[in-house]
Length: 103
Length: 103
Length: 103
Length: 103
Image 1 (cartoon, helix red, strand yellow):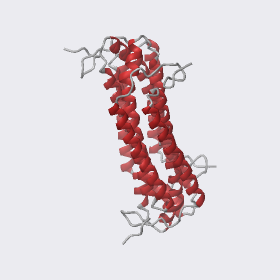
Image 2 (tube, rainbow over the protein chains, first blue to last red):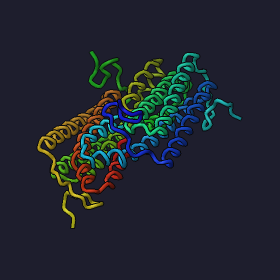
Image 3 (tube, each protein chain N blue to C red):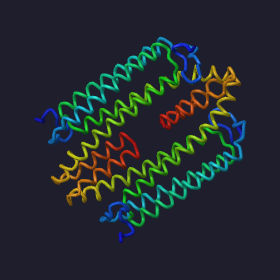
């Protein structure tokens, strides 16, 4: 049985919990992105100009990328460092897989 | 005075309203992306594994891109065609600007 | 029989030839990108630091994107406008397909 | 004095030289990308259809991304693992900076 916050593939835990600051910042960013998406849904419904809708969609995409960067930075600084220090160098495969998803 | 759904820069209206099908589909996709973001916020809060959080963030980014493509397709098929047929070929500058934002 | 510079799918010609300025600029940019790639090949061969190699690869990717934007701008301003003015509004499908490739 | 293949910023060497296989593969890929760019320059010169030129440019962009992934994988498996094992956990900042450049 794996724990709730473990990796479903390898069973690895996130040993170092996220800091309250990181959680607060990610939550704030996600809330803002949700607000942007709700605004876009209204713009589409009200037949607002496509160019403006697309500009807002590009802004959401940038916002999501910024969240990803923040989570990735924490991932590298905690999980990746810890696993390499523990001798598990195969974590680099996982980083590559993530890198590929965002590239 | 410009109308509510006009372009704030050039005053151009979205002459052809979005179809009910497009609105329903974009709404459905936005609702799903909002649901994904809410799920990610919970995952971060519960210290779920970073790799899983990042995979979900990549999925949201893809979902937002898919919405952008759908709005862009409608934009090209309606506004852009109409403006070019009306002799306003400068709409190509706007398409380039949007293209740049998503590239 | 289609002409050499026509679209292999639809037979459409590039009716408006590229300007000498555009050709010169694209040629200059491509030559520079080729020079960058040759430099990267030498860096890899000489075991130069990966971070520097990757920074140069990111620069080449940006350079290629800039060329694509330039060709796309010309495409929109000539082929796309001309085909829409000639009543061929299906060119928007092709623009979407290109948009998808670069997104 | 830093050695030729060291990082200009931190002086770190690429301690583990690239394998002959990696060098051969990157060289082959770069040569192919250069060939593609030379082909595109000719297509532009000959007024070949923009859509075809853009499709080739998108292919070059993908090819450069694939080279970047290959160099990144080697970087993670050698430099990054070695530096973390040597206690230099600040290498994660550099990985983040690279990640940002390609995202």
